[in-house]
Structures are given as structure tokens and as C-alpha cells.
Amino acid sequence: MSPLSCEAKFKSLYHKDPEDIAFCPYRICPIGAHSDHNLGKITGLAIDKGIHIAYSTKENGVIELCSLQFDKRAQWHIAQVPAERQNDWADYLRGATLELSRRYPLHLGMSGVIQGTLPIGGLSSSAAVTLSFLCALCRINQVYPSATELIQMAVSVENSYVGVSSGKLDQSCELYSKKDHLLYLDTRTDDYELIPTHPSMPEYDILILFSGVERTLAGSAFNMRVDECRSAAYALKALSGMTYGKFAETNLREVPREVYEQYKNQLPETWRRRAEHWYTEFARVEAGAEAWRRGDLETYGRLSFESGWSSINNWETGSPELKTLYDIILHTDGIYGGRFSGAGFKGCCMALSQPSEREHIINRITSEYLRAFPALDGKFSIHVCHSANGIDMQPKAAV
Image (cartoon, rainbow, N blue to C red; front, side, top):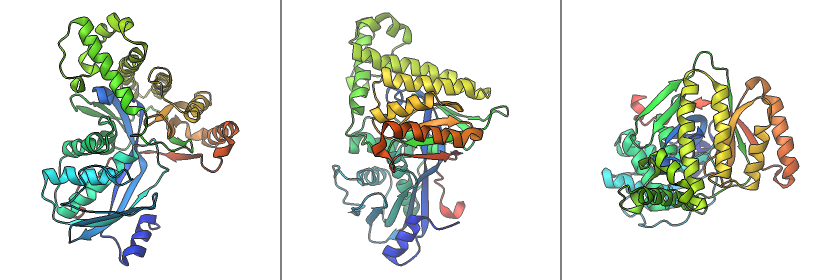
């Protein structure tokens, strides 16, 4: 196997080989998007692309990182992490250092080079880089948190340090996933099931279609959508006479669907649309898990397309580029299903497709998309991926 680019960059910077390489896969969520922040259910798959970090120990406690995707090098000490974000690419990693140091004693720093194996945007890049960094820093300091702790830390980084009101979908997929299995997770209870691919299920590619337009989650309308969901839950509780407490702790999972159906027409239209997506997505996830269990990829794919439609019309996300991509895959033969991947403001789409039709599918999508957005020629790209195992947090010697 040829060396990774991050290995070569590490050697050129430090004139030695890295001690180890940490890896965290990206994830897709064909059904279950925009629901984890209100404690919904999700289905997801890790893919065989992700974030690599080539790293070595620094005895003086300094963390020094550079990324092949960004120009600026970042540096801080494990005991002197800025209390507030610095508004650059390394904020997730500063926040992760803080979160880990609150739970475990840290004595050693690290030098590292970060490499993403796909373009940025729409594949949980922030969660993947956070978890791969935590993996490296934990190994160096010989601390090994549980999967639950790692998810809690990574989510706290997003919510408290970076300021994105996300749930635990990304981190859970990247930790729990298993190759050739579908992760079916209840984000309220953390109960999950890895549903194996049924023997009768046809083979499928996972296509990642990058629009050529990057997106920044914290700078998008993501947080507003989450607040609108909570507002709907709060109002439904008040309208129905349910007990309600703090707004920030209110979520739609606490409100039965019958209550929503009874009072939804009394909600402001925007709040009703957000709640409509959440409740219908909950039902799609349950139906999708059962379809996967019996090997019915046609039904699972159709539900993913329906999820994409709801994201456009009820969740009201989608740049012109992503809406165009969604429409193209919806009308392309050989694709079982697909939708936006990630927040849905820029980024990418994902699709489950027939391997036998791969060349036709890629050629048609590329032709149609670049006809609509010729300026993105050279930036738009399609990547064929497959399911993969989640991150391996075990110490190197135990692998």
C-alpha cells in the first residue's frame, strides 16, 4: 500500500516516521436526518473513507497540528487550551482537548498531520476529525474512554465549544458501525442494533456526490431549525396541557404524535413544517429498519428519497446545487434512493445504487449537473464508497 499523504507530510515536517495513524470513517444517514437533536431514531452506515491523522508524541505537552486541507498550523498546550473558540479549523480539536482533560489526566501532547480522504462538507467531517484526534490523544496518554464517553465528549465539543446544536447521529455512526450492517439507533435511550445485510439483498454502491460548494455548519441556519423544532414541542405541550419545563430541555420525542396531529394546525406554519419532518422521519426510520432487515433495498431506498423530499419541503434546507443533485438522482435509473448528506445547506448528496449500472449512473449525473452548473466543472466530483467498520479505539499493541 502506498503511504498516505499525511504520512509523507509528517516525514517532511519532522524528519521521522509518525508513531501511528488514527483513522475515523465518515458516515451517511440515508434515513433519520434532522431528528437526533430532538431525540429521534436514525439509521446510518460508516463508509470506507474518512479522516487520517499521522502523529507522534510530544513530551512537553504541546499539541501541534496541520491539515492538508487548510493552510494554517494550529498549536496549544494540553493545560492551556483557549476557553473560547478561535474561529478556525482547529476549534473542534481544542474543544476535544478540553473535554478529555476534564475527564482524564493528560501529560503528553502530540504533533500530527490531518488528511481527509474526501472533499469537505456533508459527511460529518467535524465529528470524524474530532474522534480521530481523540483516538490519537487517548492512545498517547494511555487513557481509553468508553464509546459512550467518546460520543458525549464529541457532542459537547460541537454544542458547547463550537456552538452547533447538533445531536449524536454523526459520532454514533462513526463509533458503532460495522461493515455490511445498518446501524439502527434510538438517540433517546442509546439502544442500538446492527442489522446485517440480508442474504437476498442486492449489492449496492454508496455514491458520494459533492456539489462543489462547501458549507459551514455553525454559520448556517442549522441552529435555527433546531430551535424551531423545540418551539413546536414547547407549544404542543402548552396547547395540550402537558407539563413543560426549560425550553432548552424540551424536545419532540416527549410529545406523542397523536398530540401533534390534534394541535398541529394551531402551530405557526414554520414550526409545523419542522415538526412534520421530525414525526414523519421517525416513522420512516422504523419502516426503513424493517425493510433492511428483510433485504428490501427498494423500499429502504424509496424511504430515503422521501426523507430527502421532506428535508427540502418541511425542513426547508437545500442549496440550488443540492436540490438539483437530489432531483437528478431521483430520476436516474439504477439508483435505489438518496438524499442530502449532512446539514443540507451546501455539501453533498449520497445515493445507494446498482454496481452494474455504475458507469451509466456517474456519466448521467455528471452530465446533467454540469449542464445546470457549468462553473462547477472541476469542483464537482462523484466517489464510489462501501460500508465500513467504525473507529477502532483500542491501543495499538492490542490490535
